[in-house]
Image 1: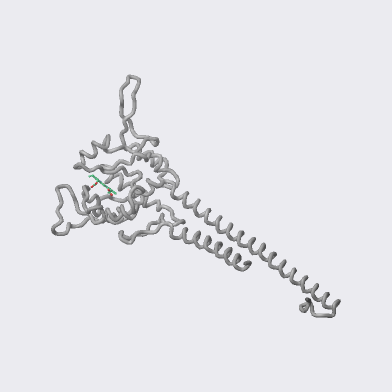
Image 2: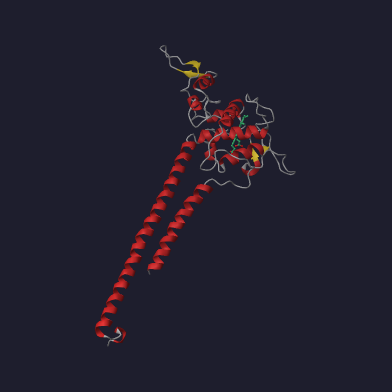
Length: 290
Ligand code: HEC
């Protein structure tokens, strides 16, 4: 009985330990069908590549923002910790590139002014209907949570941007519809948005299609999960805490059970002593008592 319980306890501790470690290692597995690339933000130690986030903002701004809004982002987010971390001055300058409607003023009139840090990202269209009408009946989804909303997340978006191909023979495509390997049904109403050299990076990085796709995807993952870095730090602390806790549980279990074991031995010893004393007194083997 004692052995079985000991084995069981050891097994339970071992299983919890293994699952803790393997959970932390495999928590973000990638699907093999997507175009492979290394994301710096994956895994429990993952952090965003700042330069890539800044370039990603540039791609979003110069290319995607013509059709896609990012309504949950504010210009001040661009200078916050854990994001692209532009300086506050840079973020102010970025905001000031846009005109924002404000008001009403004291005459009851709406007016436009330059953007401020507290403003939300300017939208390309006033509402969903207008953007759908302008894009051949397809709505360019808002980008602030897109990386979380789509199954496959970063890998999906990255692959989609690189997944434009000639349609196989016999595959009918209507006007304004394009063939994409990764879009469901392989039909997408978005013309391939990226092509080599489309933007000019100020840090000297070559703006190949793959590079821009990677940068803008990184930016979109941050937009959808702005606290990812602090969550990873917290997750790491939790794992360390669990490992320490499990070690303590294991050690105290060893201690408790060793005491239990020695007590049994003590009892056996006492029994032996009594047995011997009785034998001496009776002058007989106690086992033959009737
Ligand atoms: C000319 C307008 C336009 C531009 C520019 C544009 N898109 Fe789109 N995008 C669309 C439209 C329209 C759709 C909807 C397509 C559909 O549903 O068939 C879309 C859909 C998407 C989707 C979602 C696909 C899905 O799973 O539904 C992603 C991701 C995407 N765009 C990324 C980008 C990125 C990244 C950029 C910038 C590099 C960009 N788009 C630039 C118009 C545009």
